[in-house]
Length: 142
Image 1 (cartoon, helix red, strand yellow):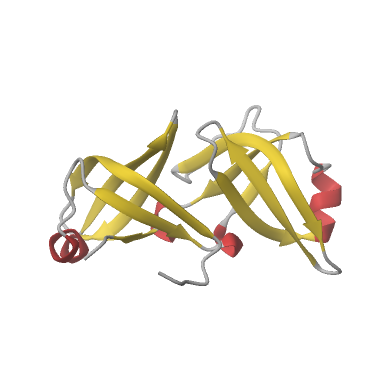
Image 2 (cartoon, rainbow, N blue to C red):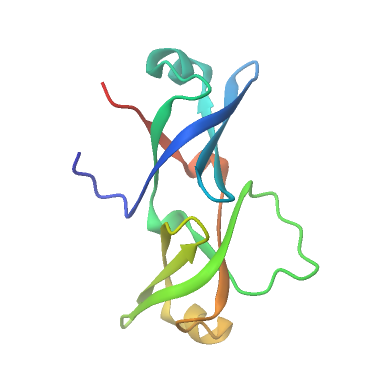
């Protein structure tokens, strides 16, 4: 599969919570890392999503926020993946930040260069990738 999404994760569905319109899907990446996705009930049916099924989770880098200090902060975003900055590529306007998780997977975020400076982001610092469950697209092999 060739796709423009910067974040492509292989995982296994660990839980499904069916709602009246949408379904919450928990995807285990390995280690303690988990992604929560919200998809339509129709997608659950058409993709054959069940616990134990191998899936691919896709998230655009522009949908990822970077947080360096979460003390005293509560968020509505379901996904907060903690790790260390392992890559930083600065551009004139935007920068790409790679955060390596405990599972060994790396989450990439595209944020402004000003935000990198304001947050003190550099390789080796602790940071979290934050994104909404509705930003996750689930794919399955045919």
